[in-house]
Picture: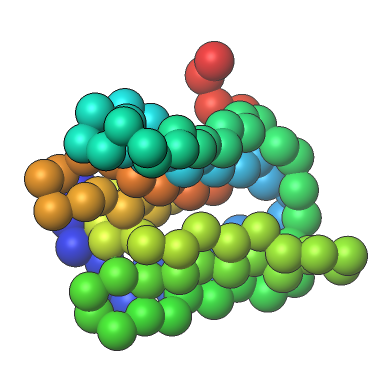
Length: 117
């Protein structure tokens, strides 16, 4: 993966607009939180192969971390804290956010075909 290039990622996000796509979204602080602070709550979200269509896509950020949003007819999907990106299999966009130690904190993937499960 490489650091987010805002213009390139924006172009890739827009390539999925008005198409039926599959989304993978996950967040976690998982074991990262409780072993550091026993009073911390572990939280996470995981959704894979949600089939959606969105009419607008946007990435915003300050160069350190980014937020990507997908606007649907009746709502939004967004991920915040993104730091890195990769295009794999020439068709699947992976956006991820890693902490200072390189651990995964958030991931948003978009594809026109289902992800393996």
